[in-house]
Length: 98
Image: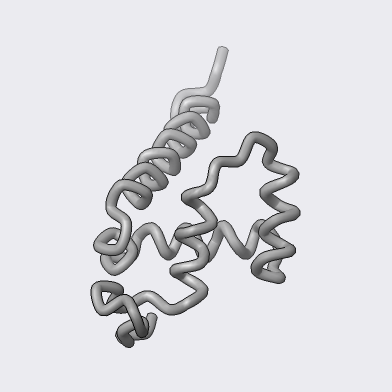
């Protein structure tokens, strides 16, 4: 991650142009995941899977948290909820089922 300042935005330190665009993109509301995936390809020229890997790293970034704390914390909560839902669906290891 670069530590450059964005021109016209001296408060944004450590985020490059793509990272700022990803955060702005995530602040939009999407009703249909397929439309969002299509918009990701159109806007960023990458697959949705690659975009979500970038986003996952970005929301762990202190610079992103400083830039838009409400958005980043919301995305972190959503990620935690998805993880919790996945882990509750998994079969516990240890004792075999009878």
